[in-house]
Length: 270
Image 1 (tube, rainbow, N blue to C red):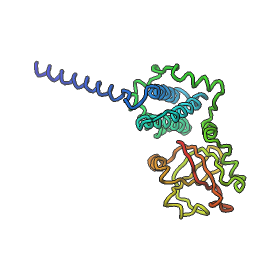
Image 2: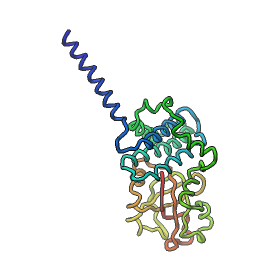
Image 3: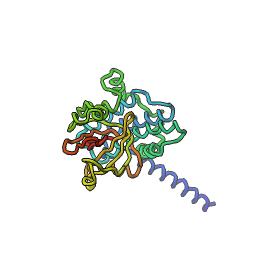
Image 4: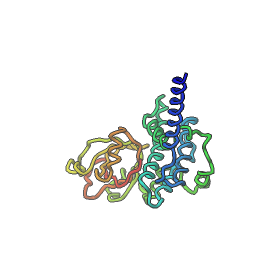
C-alpha cells in the first residue's frame, strides 16, 4: 500500500511541477515592459479569434495592427526580447492574411500555424482564448480607426510613414521620369536568381534577388543588400514565400532602356 501511495505522490508532484513550469514559461519576461506585453497579448487574441470565427478581417484590425507597429517603433530603448515579441505579433497578423487566402483552396497556412505557435509560447494557449480579451486595452486604437484618424490600408500607412507618393504602377509606366525616386510595392515575394541589364551578375556578391508579385499589377525583380536584409533572406529561405511591403528605387546609374521592372529595395516590412 505504501508503495502505491509513494508512486501516487510522485505522480502528483510531477503534475504540479509541470504546471508550475508552464506558468513560469508564460509569465511576462522582465525585459518586456507591461504596456507592450498587454497590447501584444490583446492584439494576438483578437487576430486568433478573427481567424477562428470569421471569413474575413474586420476593417479595423489592419488599422489597429498598424498602430501597434507604430507604437512599437516609437518605444525608447527596445530590448531584444521586446523586439522578438513585436516581430512575432506582426508575423501573426501577416500570416493570418495567408490563412484566409489558403481557405479559398480548402487548405491551411503552415506559416500561420507556426506563427500562432510562437505566440502561444509567449502567452500560453489558454490565455489566448477570446474570453480573456480586454477591449479597453486597444479601444483607443479602434476609436481612432473609426474616426478615420489613420488609414486602415497598411500599404498607405507605409507610404505615409516613409513620405512616399509613388506606387509601382506610377513608376512602371513612366520609368525614365521617375528614376532615383522611392516608390512602394506590396505583394508575395520569393527568392530568385535573375540578374540582367544594369542589375547584372556583377552585383550578386552584395545583393540577392527576389521576385515580387504585387497584390495587383505586374511582377518585379528586386535587389536587396545581403548585409542589410539578412533576416528577410533567411525567412525567405525557410518559408519559401512571404507577403512583404517595400520601398524601392531605380538609380539612374543602373537604368537601361527596355530593362523591365527591376529596382533596388531601400526598406522592407513583412
